[in-house]
Image (cartoon, helix red, strand yellow):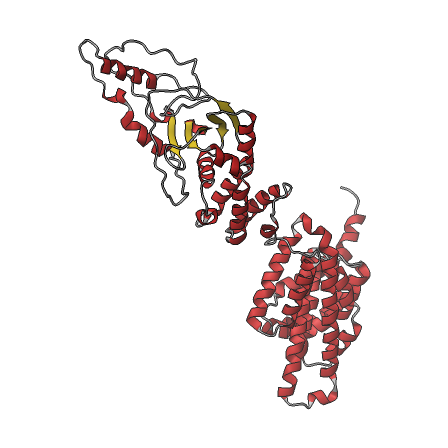
Length: 522
């Protein structure tokens, strides 16, 4: 932050130039910018107006002007920038003033290389009893006329420094990273309504003030900044991270930061689990199509972001258990609805009485598809694949229902084939075999309807997934399934999945590879 140094003040005949304290959009205590410094220094440079003139007897006023010119043209100290008001340190490198200066044009000094200096007085004019000299980067030198009582009362840092030695007239802080905010923070020591002074400031500026206030142990300013950060909105994740990291740094100092941290941290440890379970339940029970579709997309996207974070590893099992509980509930509901729709008297019911059941079947199938996507993203869908492959009762009821009632369920089978074909799910050989035996024929029976009646159905993707799943089985099982497919394909054509690529691979494995391997090397 900066090193503080105690120095003494020497008297000088140079008149102090006080810079007015202004109200700006960025801050209420105005510390001039480099551009402002250059503008204030430009008209004060007498070297720019010197013209050659014949030697003449020097009057006392001329000697005074030459002395000032020499002093300004001399080299600046390497670490200490001297104020317009007076010197706070002796400068051994500065040469003594010469009695005369050659009457010739001096080289124009560059404004950016000249020291930038300002003096500010706080409180009642003429009552200040100590100087605070702030030396910053880029040649800034700010001299504050302040009051010891104010510094001691507001800052324990200054109180400790002033108690070390009595009768001090100047304190110096070297290498200030943020001189403007130092000036603003010292100015806040004179404010009775600090919270009102901080209003309408940006969060980034408040964080800068908080950093200086922490260094100075300015407790009332720290508290006001925390109250501001607790109440004001934060813009974006980057700003939120800056606020939280700054506040957490203060946590170990006994400062009350919990009101700010409560915005990002719950009070109870199991709140995230309970909240996620509640959100999933709300989505699963919703009947409003548009809101349901939007929330499914949002929750799935946010869960994918969580899956990419290492910190989420500890909560994976808890989240998976909650999702699998919902999956079992959906499967039980589907079985109950299929049983209801398969009853003989259900066929004779009016269509108005059938519609709620049909809509409920579609809703539960869509719920299960959404939960399957979540588990696939979490790399935890293997158990659901086993559950679906072993659901023989649901598959048996599938053929007893009209296609318009049941085709949503075949979308789940298609998604499982795609996930296996992509390597997103790695079930055992027996599970893959059972999945094809149980659900491939129901999917083939619904295939024509899926192509024309389901907006989300991707024919090419499903066909590739089925083919790749078949090719993961032993060659004898590939043959059995693909020969059965040939019979269906020859009967229905486009109404059957086109597994030509898988059939070609099986053909080469069966009829070509053994002969190639048996051929002698050329």
